[in-house]
Length: 205
Length: 205
Length: 205
Image (tube, rainbow over all chains, first blue to last red; front, side, top):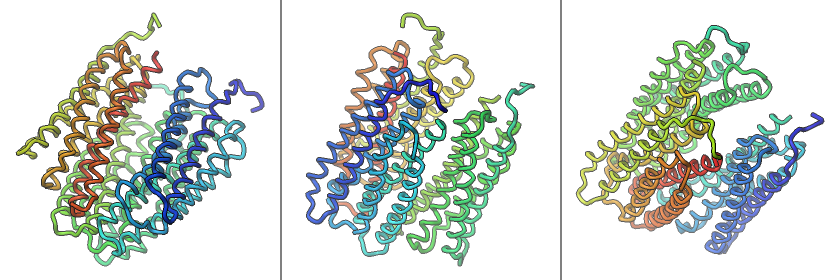
């Protein structure tokens, strides 16, 4: 459009980038927790701190929207983006938290596939956030996240089929299902982030 | 109001009607899958195609909203309506998908009552969509969908009581509950569609 | 701001206060149902009536928003507040309803802690609603509700750990988990109410 009336307040882009970086950390803690001999309690504690840091960033974004007269894009879209980034973190924390709380034993190996998807999504999201400033080269990002969510969904379904195949007792199924559901919800939440960015890009173009 | 400033773009009404027709197909696939000797895999495959077709229509609506300057009613309401129609389809697909994935045996006969409700809701929704153009005779539609959702809710609760009565083992309860929950969510989503239409009609009246 | 252009329509504040008072009643029915020898069916019936009354109030608010030209604060915020208050009631009713439907036996004593949190939240919410008029002294309210939700969350997690510790069979876990989940969702919904009020207060300040 050549000329923009709205003065660009870079703080928002920086805050969204910070928010996405918390997700990179969260996803890497999930990868750690799956490793043999991982100290789940200690990792859960670090996840809790990461989640608190992410909360702070979300609050900073909300406070800034409320106190800023001219925002770089629609207020509603800023809220949506901040809260969908926050949702990802909540689901990632929930997954580790439940592993500790339910005192589950061995985790099905397929969880590694779900976590790989989350790591890729987190990296892509963190890389794309600074590009919100120019609204350029974002299409590839959201297409790839949608593709990854699809891969994650297939892994999720394979795990469900395994859980219900008769080799796990019902109580173990209940525990494990809550955990893989949390991971699947984290992947879905990454897709919501990508869709929100698509919406914003389309409006601003 | 006699005279309307907004030129009527019929495409939106046509797209919403198409969207609702996908739901009629989905509900009829659910009825098929309950029949004795039904080939669940084959029906699940057709459901998957129906769900993809519904997705396409939803995307068409969103694209059209984003590229249209004057919309027949509030942009936000168009998004809400499109996404609640889409939710219905997702839940209907989920129900059949889980039947296959969990390899469930016989389904409790009460599921037929839930599916009947969904078929009635789908028919009513498809019939009412073209009436959005004139915003006339819609009240009966949303009252009836709310009544049907109530009937569906009663069937749902009877099934839950049966599942937990002690005649099913815990793993089977887990599987069947996921399926009846999906059907109940589809009925709830039909109610959300009806409530959205009520909101739109009230605003435009 | 000294001078307000918007004439104050007190009806909204009264309706929100009524809505919150239904929640006080709901929380007290939850406390009753936990008492030894409680007649669950009879209490469930009173809860059903309380929930219907709450529904009526929600509809009154929505109707009033739709028919009022100047609202005391943003239309969207009024909808959000009304619907989050309504959500609390739905979850409280669900909890009692499932106790009856699942014919559960003894309830873990920790449920009393969850219900105490709900009673405190309901009281605080009802007290704060009339203060919406002047938007004064609300900060303490939302901080306290957030603190209570945290306490409730800890009780919820202790109950989950107990349920999955091996002293309950899987079917009983399934039943009880649905009930404590409903109570936890009610606490979360109170937090959403508080956050909505915070948002409104920040915008109007």
